[in-house]
Length: 340
Image 1 (cartoon, rainbow, N blue to C red):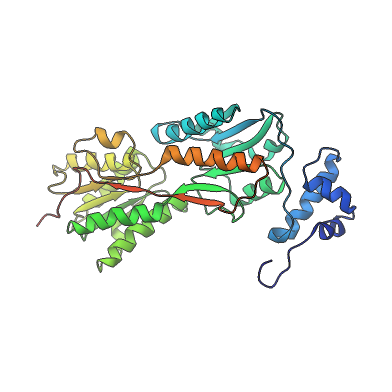
Image 2 (cartoon, rainbow, N blue to C red; image 1 turned 60 degrees about the vertical axis):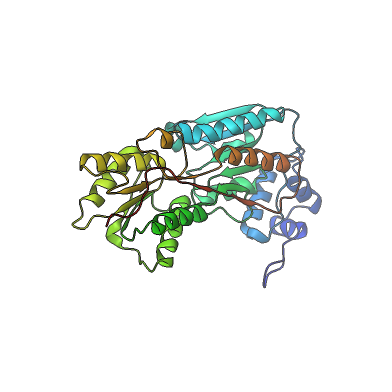
């Protein structure tokens, strides 16, 4: 029960639809002996009743039902590590993985058809571009799924796994501040992305601890978190009349772009400029100098998401729906004391 409002019951849904309690119960329990239009009638009523309505349960899990994995991005080292760990863990559970990947898949309306897709028991959605209301509609149909690294804050009753972005950002900036840097340029990720906002909040929290207020001219947000956009943003920051002594990037790829911009201007790293990233992908160890960064447990995120999904498929109740996995500061040669 939530404050000021009682939880709706099966009887309330029956009254809302004009159907019998037995029919509503069959729909909510995922039984197949219900006409499609009747099922839709009940699910629409559940949606209208909102969070207080009884939640539909997944249909009985078919033996060997596959898991659909949606990752509408190029499977580079970041997404590739997550997808690989998801696939390996799904196989350990004796199931098959159906993969929908690649940037071209971003515009396809996949979610509405998942509950009706033959042989698919549930789904893993990696950084889904769909708005939250589409995830809610999928949940209301009783289809089991887990979100990895949600782009926007997930609804409270949708299972999600992410890294501790705020804590990681705070630890990274605390390291930079401890080296004496106060004028720090921040190359942020896409606006309105949950990881972008959380990491930025962590960066600014550590700056505030040192008595430094965020300077708007030292922040650049990029439309895509890649090397080229990191380079362009770093170029703007380094060409300011009073350039920053350190650059902290949303991810390692953008930090590599910042290293390129620094090299073009004859700046030594870390002697003239410190540079840091986030993620700890292989690229962070291949640069000269190697990047200071924050390690995300990417493979563990994939494993944890599959574990949560298997529990949903077994109709277990999940108490911890939003799981945030710890991050680790990795100090390498790209950060050093602020120049005098």
